[in-house]
Amino acid sequence: MGKFRGKLLDWKNRLSDRHMYSVVVVLLAVVAAWGIYQYKRAADLRQELDNQYNRAFYEMVGYVQNVEVLLMKSMVSSTPKMAAETLQEAWQQANLAQTNLGQLPITQEVLANTSKFLSQVGDFAYALDRQNISGKGINEEQYKQLEQLHEYSVSLEDGLNNLQASISDGRIKWNELADKGTQLFKKQSENLTSQLFTEVDNTFQEFPTLIYDGPFSDHMISLKPRGLTGDEVSVEQATERVKKFFGEDKVASVEHTGEIQTDTLPAYNFKITFKDRPEEEFATADVTKTGGHIIWMLYNRNVEQETLDIDKVKQMGKEFLESRGFKNMQDTYYLKEDSTATINYAYEQDGVIVYSDLIKVKIALDNGEIVGFESKGFLMNHTERDIPEPQFTEEQVKADFMAKRDLSTVGLAIIPTNFGSEVFCYELKGKLNDSDFIVYINAETGVEEQVLIIINTPNGILTL
Image (cartoon, rainbow, N blue to C red; front, side, top):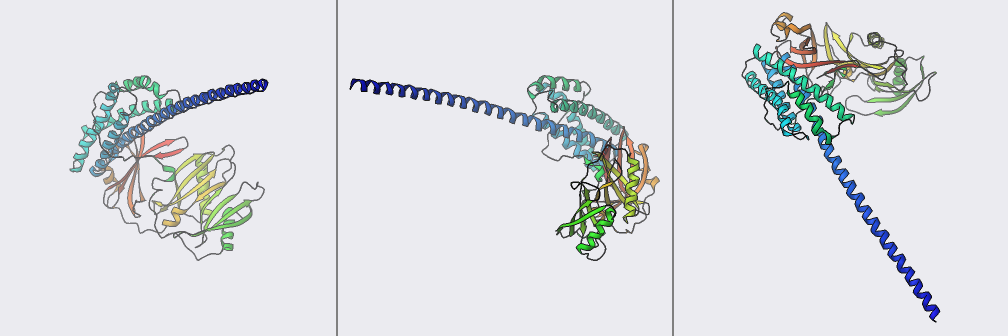
């Protein structure tokens, strides 16, 4: 009996030890989990704070870039109305830049030095805006002040871009920015001595647009396509149109894969394979049910190293369009990317460029093959216009243009508006302070319709 009692006590003791061990293990696990939770929570909070800094910084850089562009536009504008609108935007953008600047981990002393410049831009732009609204143009002295402010804005923008590159590459962390950022802003403030700032609650921001896609590519297109001609075609007839478009000697098969039902351009969709090409290198295309017109095409093939220059492929693209029935198309803007060039072609009527009637052609730079095509702008808008006589001569337009000394060419163009209409304009191209610009002045009323600042890059042309 005693022997049995001893074994029972021994088992009880072991059970107690194991229980305590389990309790200790559970407690350690809880503590570890709590520590991990706290660490993760701190990391999440740190990341959230960094995200806020990133947002404020990148928005500030964008606003400063907008200020620089708007100051340039105000110097190019030839009418008080357009200058007033541009300067009002510059005033707003300068205020928004300061708002975001104040959210960065930089000392207030340094923030004040940079804010002064943004302030002067804002106040000066606001004063000129009021002056222009009253009908008074910018005088020569004010024009010189605008030029000086623009030079300062370029200096500030360069410094911010350098800092942005350092942050993006991870060379500067936000917890280091207070020290390193201070040196940057101090350096910038040495050149910016006169400045002041006021806040405004407006969230407008102007972003650059790819001019290769046309400065007017985002315009409102007509609800009813004006360039769509012909009778209803069957799937079989549309298939034949696809073969002719690509070249019957190149096409291995054309497969009808579906239909596109829209109010504007109902279409058939096709998959195209080619002779002596792998199956994965195929093309897709949409063909209108009315008339059998190719709306768009994309050829999925690997493009080798480029061997053709842009001037050569521009001519090849024009010849391709002519062979497909698109006459009088002139190349305008382009973008090079991944060994291909996407070129815009606009219709020309009686020496007037019609930007509404747009066709995009994507060309492989290894052998000049057409690997992309889009004609929606042309199909939606093309028609023969009744173009009026300009109410002003080129000489009169030049005489009234503030930056006339910087003009290189003057021509006529039709541009679309955001309201679905079109405007007959003089197109003025020139260069100011090493920046190219285009200004559109209504050829019938003399009203300045649009101002674009051009950026030439190795891969194409951008506009602001």
